[in-house]
Length: 290
Image (tube, rainbow, N blue to C red; front, top):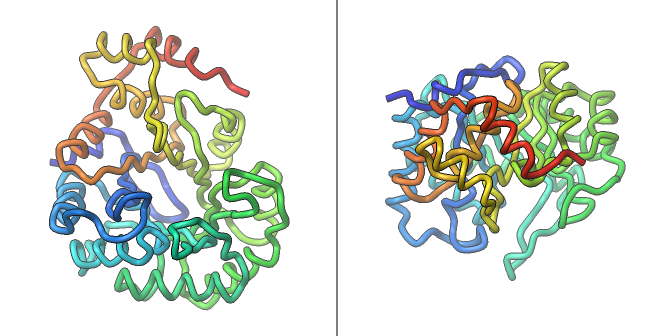
């Protein structure tokens, strides 16, 4: 069906991907911990995503932990040649489902091997270093030791490309002095626009920007303006929010997640939407830039 390809393509390093991808976080259990309620449904969602043209899956071995990557392997291995799998390392899960920092060189190396084993891969396409100086959000901190260790894993051939997640402008600048950065994955959506200037900066450098929580995360976007524009477009509010992101900048790649095939179809349908200048202007007013 190739519906995702309506969004066009962009590059992550030397990897050409459709701009509408899929985020696998919701394939694990509640609070991204433990197994899903229906494993076969999770497998069906992954296979449907590829059938609809998705060729870019975002995951992590700390989803579950391990469970999401194992589901991806069971659903899709052996992988299609055109499928790009992106993972994140730098965090671990406590027994109580808490999120904890795991950014030491030894922890990062172990995490890369865990991802390779659970996904059934010999090399990771892209590994994002999730910065965990503050679990709640971006916070300044020196990443030289952690990123140097990840760059060494790239030199050894275990990782093709490196990105950052939950990063500040200062940290991105530091990272570029250590290794090539092909993508940045930060929180960004209609109502959370702290990275407006960063999106433009990265676009000028040919670096992909991948918003996490593109629909608001655990608290879905709610706005009377969004509802009005969506109604005028004949779409759902969340479809309209995704379409706004795709039109916001050509270097934005989307990874909305879902455990439902029906919801997946709605998300991917947003790739074909074209918002009028008036609609974009109205939506821009929901979350003015910082």
